[in-house]
Image (cartoon, rainbow, N blue to C red; front, side):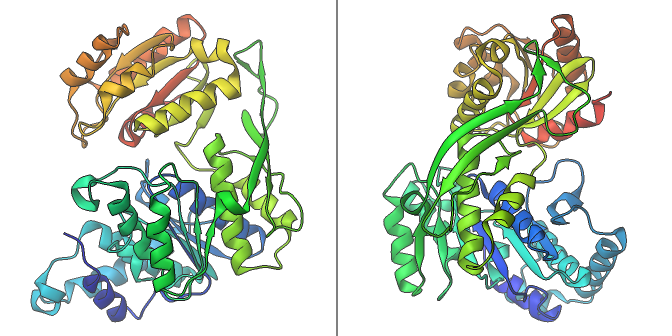
Length: 435
């Protein structure tokens, strides 16, 4: 199903656009996008021109291929696409390794590499798409690799145990390239990473052993529990924390826009990665970079829209990530506001909705829908799961109608709305958000 020879062949054919220094490669089951964005933001504060390759996108394919400051000029995307398609269209099937056609993700990854080359970036950060060992991004030679938490995911491709999945993730560890390992729920995966690092003669830094996170405090601009202060330009909610490590000359005190204890952990991994490659980089620059990092659909708050105090978009879609999201909501807003939330929820058919449904027992009202038109879902199963959890709900298969219905219900109680369960759902409803 996966291989690297096609990417290696195409990179050579295109003039090796993946060759750049410094490069950072970020894998894991969770936190890849956030950690990648934080690294890019730190490098941006250090005055590097940075390319950032992440997934998924919400509204535009260009979201996968950006600079640390945002989109490149359209001319960059167009030139890269034209160069790629000219190369692909001039290929005969027999020239490709094993005569395999290029996959969609391989094409997008090559497009991203060409964009970075054409834009003339000085550094780049690549988020792994799936797994690591045979992922299309694994043709790069990074200055540092990062691997976040390992969970059971994509078991049909990566294996049925944490250790098997960790083996695939460990494939991004290269010879003599340092690797930062993030917080792990299953400690047995550490031996997998340690073995790979030893084989590659690479230094391994286990973040929980070399850094300490404390003093997590949420700051928000809510008044009367739910009203938003409209005059301020800073985010509605931020999270302060302290990160200590022997690698830093002093504790870091970022004010993160990406919220949750796990984001503080991602921040520690990102800071350690950059500090490993640039030991003399100042803690002030690292703090500023971490504080500026933000991603769409990761605890993304849009205040004063659709007649509501705010809408909270989050792409959480597993038991662990949704549980973490709900805990962060309580920490950020307090129990009273957390219980006032209305919920618009959808799930892909391969998710564990039976266990997820029970997590939403304390929200005020629930509307169920499908995650857009392009993702397979199982509405009867979803309804059965919420019925079993004894949670009242309304259902509307049309995503636009479901969103408008959820907004109207929340308006009546002047309550915030949480949209979660699927990035596809968020992509489907965002065009309907109005001031």
